[in-house]
Amino acid sequence: MGEIRQSITLRDTAEMPGALRGASSRTVWARAARHLARSTSGKIGLLLVALVLLMALAAPLIAPHDPYEQTVFRLYGPSLYFPFGTDEFGRDVMSRVIYGARISLQVGLIAVAIALVIGGLLGLVAGYFGGWVDSVISRVLDIVFAFPDILLALALLAVLGPELHNVMIAIGIVYMPSFARIVRGPVLSAKHNEYVEASRVIGAGTLRTLFRHILPNVTAPLIVQTTIALSFAILSEAALSFLGLGAQPPTPSWGAMLSGGRRFVEIAPWTAIFPGLAIMIAVLGFNLLGDWLRDVLDPRAVR
Image (cartoon, rainbow, N blue to C red; front, side, top):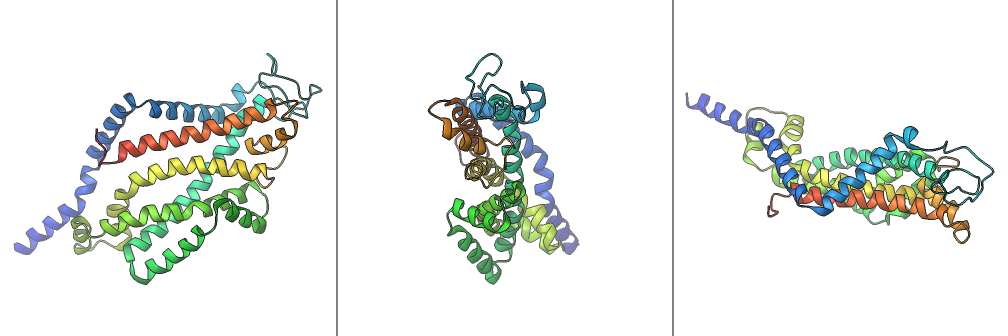
């Protein structure tokens, strides 16, 4: 009877996080709603991110013209027909800015997904197994961290080639160590918790222990890191496109538009101002949203 009672107790302890997950999720959403109601920066961040998402998703509906269509109105100033003016080829700047949101979000989301999956798995493995596995992974991450972000991305693109999918891979590799370190720390402490020990005692495998009992404890910092990394990924894509290594002409990319507009900044400043504003709005929105999420998901924050 003692052994049966002990087995039941261990099983209940091991499954407790899953049983409480629904209540915890409702608590987080309620806390987020209360915090958003009194957070001006959170509202602004959410509004800016929603604006960028709307531009990307509804581009064919809200863009006034074809972003690739060339007209005779070259370097034409802002007007009712061309609200943001035209570029050196007579293309509508507003339409190209709107469609450029698709490129920026596509690159940002895929690059961050690459960094999240690879970095998250490396952090899980390093933190859970420790020892020489942790040492090897940590040294590799330190080597990647030793290179400045933009220089490492340039080096990778020099090898892979200046294609949009290669930009996603390069940016994903650059930000991978950040996710690995974010995951590794909480895993080092979570693996010694009682419910993790209980799951091992009742025969749970390594994968079940990692993904069912340990990973849910690092989702909060991962969500925050993902949101903030999106802003840096968008900025990195714009910088690489500005240098001619990202989206290639005539693809409407904010960085490429900014690069083309700098040649006419004195006679047609709108060709550089509006793509620059789009980059600023997207980066600011995701940064403010990430700061708000960090305040909401941080259990030590004062409510």
